[in-house]
Image: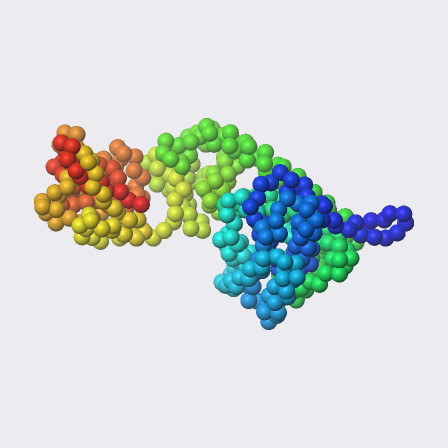
Length: 453
């Protein structure tokens, strides 16, 4: 423990330490993830202290505490009641949520519960709102060790950031530089009463094993190990930010010819390390889980270096990376629609076709399909079977649909999913691509404009 004037003591946490985090933030509401444990109780108490002493320019009515019941403990109801009473005594708005935090077989209970918590909290955070969580320095050290043991890269080792976008607002962790001992000293001085979750002693969970077994052993040799590990996380966060800056510069130079694609030939001009860095950054920008090291290597070796007429695919989670010509596409890995299915459609009501989307037809002047198409025959939505021909408006004669798809640079995996509007057995429109003679609206008359959403 730190010493001053020869006396052992804790460097006690002070509420004023929170002020720098809020001085330049314009916020409407503060939403505190409140478990009732030591850390979140101290943070709640400190926020109330700042607000009631007018050190913080926000009304008490703008502070809300959200308690989440995971349903894991037999004491859950008692904890809920305890948290409710604390907030009542402090005159703080209290919300209580019960979530399903039971992990499926093979899933980490901790990770599953964390994702379920944040999914529930997302519903509360509006624009200019802040989600506050009471993660502290010891939590940061544990997170770094967890990521290290998983073999994570720089971004993983950066652990928990201080401030990140969350839902429509932001997620702030204002206690990351504060130790648990500091918080404990404050709680004792203020005579706070908090919840001790019995599951925190269960070393079956990775974090608890590190907290109760590994870190105490490390502290015997290196007393400041938590602060050291937290500093390592800061260094990794800086390095990760630099890698993102490099990826942004590289990404601007290797955009593909289609929206949200990358150019394979441009990627191959860079070093392998930069290729990996760009791909990781690109996946993150598209809200996609980063593939494993083996999958990433597979992408570099077998997708980037494939022939342009090949259609390689790498699948992970619910995503698929594909190549068509020189472009890399990231798509959802969903069950494909059965192209043998045919739908009757009157154009007057929306037509939902899973998983493709909803077809909607709207009457517009001088656009789309001729309005009297119903009088020409029965209307159906079909899909490519092979051998179809189309006579696009404004072009001479009919053309194989396959050749038109190639001309329009439609990737092969999308072609069987494009709705085709037929009038009896004549192709009237390739939805989203072209209208066919003699069904196109002409002479400024009203016509059906068909869209897919």
